[in-house]
Image 1: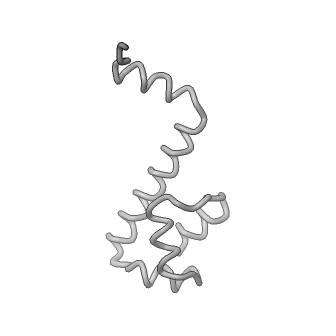
Image 2: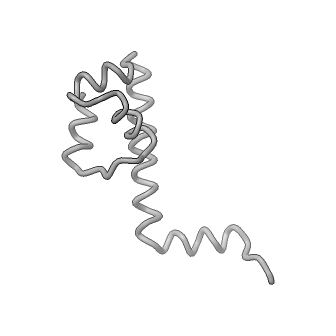
Length: 78
């Protein structure tokens, strides 16, 4: 059994919508994390501003939330 080179696997992955969805989630959560750190906003404070639990904010930063444009705007504004 021969293994495919990584570049071939990446090319195949990039043809799928799921790849780009995961990339968008990763990029958004990483930028949100950097923004909250630069403004010294804790996860607890972000949760308070959003009216959600700190556990939910943890799920957000892990990318375990089904983001909508509305939720992304709320997060960015908080």
